Image (cartoon, rainbow, N blue to C red):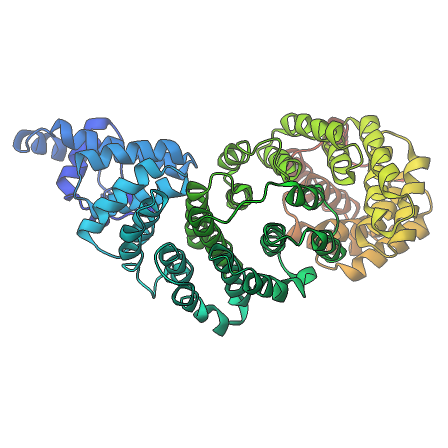
Length: 590
């Protein structure tokens, strides 16, 4: 492993080159140190000379390098908890190393390990006050303990021009709330009114703080500004406004908020569950730690709303974990963490976070869907299928769960079972609704692969009736006609209609090229299929088709090359057997 590839230079780590090199040799890890073009003999000779003149590496140096490399490997392998454990070991061996302290507390905060993050952040602040998230981590730790007078000084050390600075008005407001009058605290939030995309934060935080001070009318006034446009807000705004209404005795208005929101965002089990759960919850006054947790979570959301990138995702995850540290019952933060980790490709960590959600939580079923999706991306379809089947048992009318189940069964070549799942989806959504076209399309593919062509053709036509001119359906149906040698003129027209919409789609280009081939236009088929290969070079069928076209125009060596190339990709056994036969004897002339 090369340290530069890992994203840390030797200078950043703070180790002398000689010490690091000795440590690496001691633990048997090969690291590129810039020796290029040197013969093995020269390297061996140089190593012998060094062995005669250099002292042996100390156990501490070896342990330091081993722990760092193991931690870095775990971090790059998306194993944050293991990485934190190794970095902890490194900081024990080298407690003054600022870069390692920063890496430790930042990674620990992202994994929710504040028992590690807080002391590492505190130690880092001794060396570099105000840098990174260290002041936030130490400040909220004091706040969680009720040490309000100690929390604010740390938060004020945060660099206002950094990525952490934007959240400070919210966090300072809650740091002041237990010890200062309402007017002083609310003044901290005024900055949010000056920016177009933070106005909702001003009203949400003002509503919560007014509630905290018992200023009911002012709190309702803040929430009503957001309620007036609730259908265009994000879910976190709806949740806070609805919960505020519940605490302030406005339960009669909560259903209307959710109904209006769902007209824009659609119905989901989570929304329906929250609409029922919020009015039924015990009425409790907002506490300082709950308010601070909401501020930290809004900061996490805002970070990803604007120009999302890997660093913002990491900082955002740390803020959401801080919100959970402050209020472990803030389920929306746990869901946010799971979704963010999944979007970053860290599916194992995402599932670990999401599996902590209680079964009684309003968003439980949506979280299970996310876990199933993560398993699919991890190429564990049977695990995903098991979760989806449990979801269907708990909520048999949820169309999305039936469709997802059908999709996995189809991918697993269990076509008749997939059809059954799609049937359940159609039964629960209404067969003639416009949005059901995709279910007909998917069921048509399952019927086709199950060798029930008449049923498949009917589904494709129904999909086009509900969603005319969809290029995917046009292409599939048109190609199916060509492949069966029926309705060739209609099949070609369907494909041409798809090609006009997506002239750069490799699979649709292939279908168009194959239409030319089937109708005997071999020279033009070659030109078109070569374009398809450029768009999708790793598809076995496209390579086979180009080989067929080459054969027809007399380019026999190139044909065999393409067929051989097709065999190197994932194809089904009947197709593989057909290609092998062509490699042996070519294509018979008609």
